[in-house]
Each structure stands twice: as C-alpha cells, then as structure tokens.
Length: 567
Ligand SMILES: O=C1O[C@H]([C@@H](O)CO)C(O)=C1O
Image (cartoon, rainbow, N blue to C red):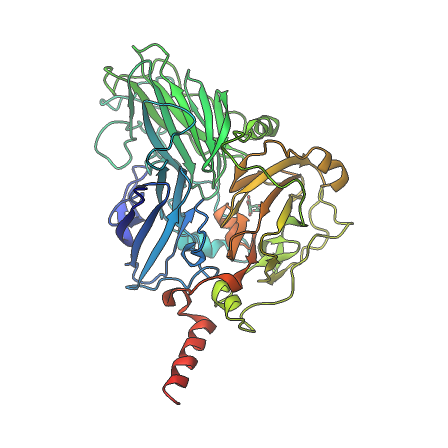
C-alpha cells in the first residue's frame, strides 16, 4: 500500500539568527532553524542525504523515537551507531518510519543539540488507517531551551576544574522562537504597538523578527491536535493553554488512554499529542505557555497566543498567562506521570515476566577532580571506534569488553552525597540476549551537594519500553514488583526518574544493534550519564562503509584492501 521513499538533501551549517531577539550563531539545516519539519506516513522510507557544512566540527543526527529496525547504523549516535560525518562529507540516513506519532530529530554528538540542531518529525498514519481520535486541525510545537553562551564554552566549562556549570538557559523557545528578558508586567498587552513594559523590555509578539512567536490561529468550537515535543538541553517544562483543558492522547509515538488535564509536564526527550477544544469565549485570545519545572530557575516562560479567529492576532489576551506549577512540586508531577496509561488494543502489552534485571544507580561524582555523572560508578566516555562496527567485526581493544555491573552495592546510601567521590571513566557495554525481556531499574540518589537529587529523563534508543512503575527511595524488588503495572503500562522511549526515586522499565531486546540508553539532559550525558546496550549484533546486515570509516573499523577495511592488492 502506497508507502513512499521521501528524499531530503540537507546541509548543516551555522546561520545567524535571533531565536530570542538576540542575534547569535545557530546551527541550522539548509539555512533554517529549527531544521525543516519532516512529514511522512507510517511505512515510508526516509532518505536524508546529510552534508556537513560545519567547517571544523563533525556532526550526526539522531531520529528520536524511530526504532531503526534493520538499520541500526542510521540511528545517528556518534561513536555508537556510526562515525561522525566530517566537514564536507555526506552521509545518507535511510530508514523506515514504521509507526505514526510525534517525533523529532536532533544532533547527537557533543552538545550540538544545544547549538540548535533539531527539528520536528511527524509521522501520520498510513493511508487507509485511522487514529483513535478525531480533530479538525493541528499544530506542532517543538520546545527547547536556549543559551547565549556558545556550546564550545559550555562544554569547556563542564570539563574544567573548578567545574563551571552551564547554569540556566536565557530563554525557552517554541519552534525556535522565544523572548529574552521581556516582561508582560501588570499588563497583558502584547501589541503590534510593543507596549508592554516591566523590568525587561517589551515582548515582541508580532512582527517579522525571528523571535516573534508562531501564533496558533483557530476557529471556535473545533478540536485541534497540538503535537508537543521537548528537545530541551536541560529543563523539564510545564505546558498549558489558559482557560482550556488538554486531552492527552499520545505519548512518545504511542496512543494513551485519553485523559484531561489543565497542564502537562514534559521532560526532555518526550513527546505528546493533546487535543484542545476551542470552547471558550471566542471574543478573546489566550496565552499558551511553557515554563520551567523540576529545577529552580529564573528562566521566564515561553509564550505564544491562541488566536480565536476572526479576532486579530494582536488582540491582547484579557487573562494572564497560565501559572507554571511550583518547580519542586514533585507530587504533582508524579500524579501526572501515573495518569499516562496505554490505550489498550492500540498499544502493545508487556511480557508478564522478565529474563533479566539491570539496576542502574545514577550518581554525581568526580574523576580526577572533574565533575561527572556515573552509572554504577562508571562514567561513560565513548570510544573512538563506534560500537556497532567494532562488535560486529569482533575487534579487540575497541572498548573495555568486561561486563558492566548489574547493580550497585547494598550499602550505598542514596540519601547522602557519595561517601567516596571517586568514579572511573569507562565504555563497557551491556550485552543483551536477542529477544530476551529486560527490566531496567533507574535508581536516583543524592548528588554531590547535600540535600539535592536531580531529575533525569532517561531515553532508550532502538526500542520503546513499558514504564512499569515509579517509586520513592531505594528500589526494593519484592515490594516494588507487587505494584508494577503489567495491565496498561504506557509504551514510551523516555521516562523520568524523580529525585531520590526509582523508575522501572521493561523492554524486549528484539532489535539487532547497539543502542544508547542515557539521561536526556544533554550536559549530563556529556558528563558521562549513559549506558550502552548491544543485542544480536551478529544479525546486523551489511553496515554502510561510511558508518564505519573511522577508528579500528577503518584500519580493518584498509588491511583487507591491502590484502586484496596482494601487499
Ligand atoms: O550536573 C550538574 O551540576 C550542577 C550542580 O549539581 C553542581 O554545580 C547541576 O545543577 C547539575 O545538573
């Protein structure tokens, strides 16, 4: 049935843009920031020919939420699935989008996501298929956070002694548009007249600037699908539309049992679809907001306007923007997380039992004085040779072949800063038996400073997992298992781990390849907060030469070529 190959020719390069009204170099694609939106139908093949026009940096692009069945080399993870694409090189990402949903793509090398390398990827149901809900129109809002400091400076700070944390972003963006240091003050006037005042300057909601928000123009008494995805580098966000309920229908490309909320939390790496019915006073416009949750922050909300036609878009909302819930009201966040249930019949069910349980302790500590994040006391530093090639071709010395720890010591106290700060750098891999069912428990702990445990949204490549449960304190298997949701757990690719808590997920290791599993806070991954899973790599088909033309796999190819020449 009508599945197509969709061709794209992309060039990645820096462009000058003013995402929050202040001009900065931004990483763009074909001169666009955010990158072009890809729209496809389930079953289509995407063929993205990516040329690196960054003159002094490598690049890769990860297709977040796309499982890459049969094409693990197209996952776009530097040092895991492929060699980085060097300046002037072209790499072809060719893969199938097999499941309808709201996705995005982003850089997965160093911290290039924070430089602006991201865009939306929307997969519609295949021709003749139907979504389990109806709507009259739709909008996509890709959420992100934005720093004025360059990514190079951020990365340098993170690996410096003393440590220099990246701090708060200057702005939050929706579809790459935000406002730095503007204030609505006591007036909600938004204005073509730029009348708003406050400590900051006026908010420039209308005009042709890069930072003027995309206004959502709607008709009264209709239902709209809002597709939300969070590409933030750091922040968890709360999204709301003033005076309107939102009905959640999709999470991470999977249908959920619909439920209505006033607002929703969205963590970095997550996506949702919500239905909004335009049932409010049609004489008014309304604010749409995204504000910071989960970390103390001074970054102001990203705002845009829900414009009921035929009101002019410049007509000021008569009510203020939604109030973002308190950043540390984690009970509220947990309540929201627990509402997310699979839409039974339209979302797969988990196996009742797992074959293996891996417990991953998340800690902040130091290696040679440098602040790092570690998993079971190993802080991930990726090898020079991408795992996919080195494992398939059984190259010794490409990485540490010892199995990483299955759990952490009984006597580790998760409520206190680490007693011993020292961690080690490593690059070991969890080898999963093909088609086995694996449980992973993510165990949070106190960070290096007293009374602080941070939020971590964990993202799995190559699979969806079922979120079986969340708990507070230290994971205790016997008790926890009693409360696992095996009836309608949501399938997701990203799940949050709350401060001092644990999150249990289950997945089937049914996708031959090597897959990253990591905290989606970009600086945390950069500081080592990730692990690597490999399964059935011997079953992986021929890896395109460009994906392995570096490190030891390049040497192997060269040696083979020399043999053929009879040298
Ligand atoms: O990794 C991090 O480092 C800082 C802080 O823990 C130490 O400065 C912070 O907020 C992080 O998320």
